[in-house]
Length: 233
Image (cartoon, rainbow, N blue to C red; front, side, top):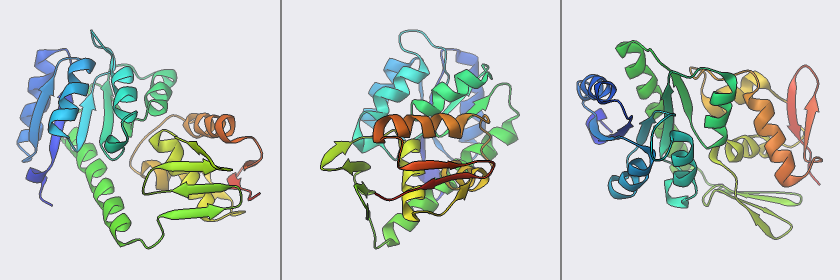
């Protein structure tokens, strides 16, 4: 795919920010659409089916976090990338973004070349995953009491369906792919978020805690000082 094949929806309530983002991304060939709040972003996502939303957090009508949650609640948008672009750099704000289903969190201000690089890295990573998915022969992992259905982004535990946010699902899929293998924190960051995505130190811990709340404590064990492993029951 060429960059001109990709649709990016920019969401911000400040007109000058939208103009700045539009100018720099259009120069790279991307198809650019804009929205001024989260509610409008949700509507436009349904209409244009963008490959990536680049979205502010604090906005009127509906903020970026709630908009991301609403988009992620629709199964057909599981593969739509969501990157937050915000002046808020606190850990709790970043964690909220990732918990809502965000794929990246970029803090303002950012230089145009760096922004373009981050956007391209996200889209390249998604393209790579899509290609791996197209060639993969195993779309369903059955591991003890859990079934991880990659095609439907669904986990089944003892016959009960459990839907997880995108990053939680990807993290669980990674751990379940090799029961008893200890995945280091660095491996998890690289495989789930990408090696050029910067997230807070507590991000993995938060996602592991959420998985344990939904699945039970026994499946994912902490290996102190190293990382985590999946234990099959």
